[in-house]
View 1 (tube, rainbow, N blue to C red):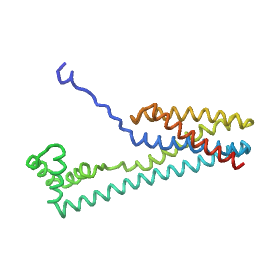
View 2 (cartoon, helix red, strand yellow):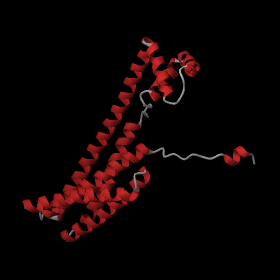
View 3 (cartoon, rainbow, N blue to C red):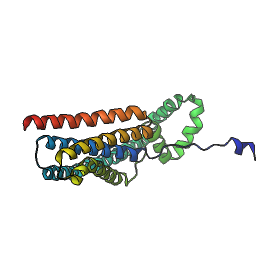
View 4 (tube, rainbow, N blue to C red):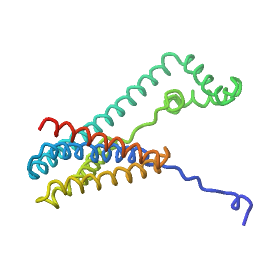
Length: 235
């Protein structure tokens, strides 16, 4: 076995950050908003059928709204990228001297001198497309978005919202004749889900699993508590 093979290693990178972001966004709102709504309506002492109907309606509306928001955000990112790419192409054609200076400035951040940039500049000038892509990446920090990313983002967010929303609503469907028991079970199940989801979110995103779990739990619990208290006070 060669030394190169012995010392070779495989770098593992987290390549699904956008998908995780969409799941986090959908699940967080899906757990919190329907939970707060169901708890709030339960506080008004209405029938359990109303709680279920309102909860399902909110999940349907919320998933569509969240999914549409994700789609529009993805489309905006796509449009922004190509608008900036067109502008960069025009600048390379119209003011190449300024673009050369910007390349030198960029490389200076990596310890490359102006004279050492000469071969790089010569290569980029021979290939305007590569020059454009270089400026997009290193000057603007932009990478071409996947053409299907907006649709995937919308679908991921919407489905995550539905899954998250059904967790606090399910006890009301299973314990239809005991509203207070359903509320208690929903509260326990949802708080556990919020804690577990926050923990996993922290593990995947590297923000601290336990801290993320507590934050998610506190935010969801406060939202439901406020909604319940307001509904109980009004009723």
